[in-house]
Image 1 (tube, one colour):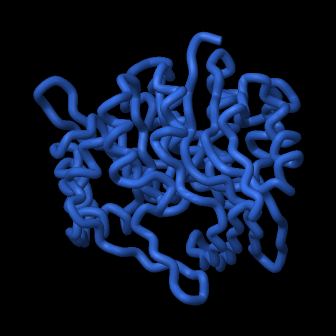
Image 2: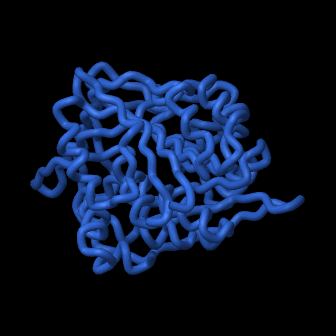
Length: 310
């Protein structure tokens, strides 16, 4: 193996309902882990997470198609695995009902892997890693730190649903990562600024990268993404479109986007190339249910749409 990539966040058991059909699948950072393993076969992928004691054998079976996944940092939770019920309407909107079970991770859990090429921190729960632990990681780690804020801004309602909260001192959070990822609603709550047009959204993305990160991926679902990044003494913004595709299951598409971007960036060091690749892979993933898009790549050795772009 040429190097390592550590993935930090929560594994989830998803119960997905769409179009009158329901199925269950591992979710959360599982998408990130498997996508990175498929796209970076020469690097060791190390998930730093919790899995419920009763689900550990299933999780091992799921990952065994990829020999470069190392489960030594997976911690066992006797109380079980986080669970999430996702109910989709006709489009991309969905209702979520999350049962939080596993405890937060700490910098001590991350310390053995500071020699990795990259850390992907994916906030599946808003307490996956505290501000102080993330800050310590940002100071101690010399590689690429990619952060998907995902559920960092989410608070649970009494019924298990979510609402977005505003983040205090967002600039301090922003400057801790090399590359940030968020969607349109998240960037507005993250910064406290509202946008009405795409031009305003692009300006807001540039404002975020002016605070310290080298790049920001602003994902827009079926409308592609906006990339803002700094290079030398200049800042750039670019819009990426994706072709219309038949949507079977959009769950995890943002996780696949982030993993694909990071994998391509580690290979080529080019933000625009990585964003184009990430949009391609995320748009392909929505045509498959659950983790099928990635798992089949591991089982069939390059005979799927996912692995055809490796």
